[in-house]
Length: 371
Image (cartoon, rainbow, N blue to C red; front, side):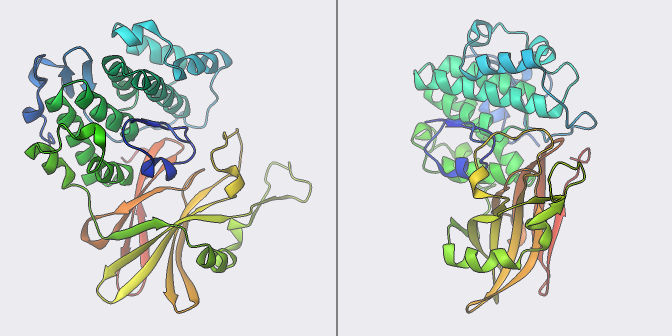
């Protein structure tokens, strides 16, 4: 079954049902071996794409590189069109004749990163509707368009992986999965989580025995135990957060007392063992659990965050806390006993990595324009 991504709950969507997923709230990777069974091979497609018979050219995975026009508004007519796409209602996308460049221009004429993200989300969700009707070829065309708009979107790529397997295109399905493997190897935590999901997803049972499928899964890095809830630990942790996690100064003069106030909560915990003698807790934070899943408005002060704690009996020590845009990040284990996390910045998907030097935790994050 698919995941629908309703853009504001990046953690929850990763542990829902099988493929494909509706949006809730991104070397070759074996592409030569994943040529379409009956259609054009990758060599016949445009550079940097993979041709799939009956679906079209699908771009290879690449990270977001957006600069400039980031926090910008989506026009009212574009919002109305997105609402239609979200329901899977567009004949040209369904039959594979849509002009993607023209579609993109009509929704985001100024290449606003936020709007392009909304467009990719609506296309992913549109594909979900057709998947629900078992119209797999049509669903795959919707996910292809979503990836053409945003090649970094792991959710749509995972859904395409499932849809292709269900449509009887095993080699193409494995190619799509191998691209998720490349993303995981590049540090995308969402990609690593999806690779873990693929190990037991019923929609992929027809391709699971293929050696190339197993090779793609090797890019998922183990070693992090979770996620889980720990209400008692969360209750101890929240008061130890820095003041900026409870209130920040209102620079716009909107709040009567001059401050934005928050009621932070911890969404998930993981146990992280960076070496044989150290056990740490990784936790994701939201500014207010009551805001989870709700739309984000312009000039909001909502935040997500990642944190690391050291626990000694009943005592907690905060080792690190970093805000991650408007929502909690996706988290997975990384190479070399690191922890990877992925979140949505103003310019698109950004990645971070936590490492332990024996005394302290450090975080290294990508920045807008450096992906």
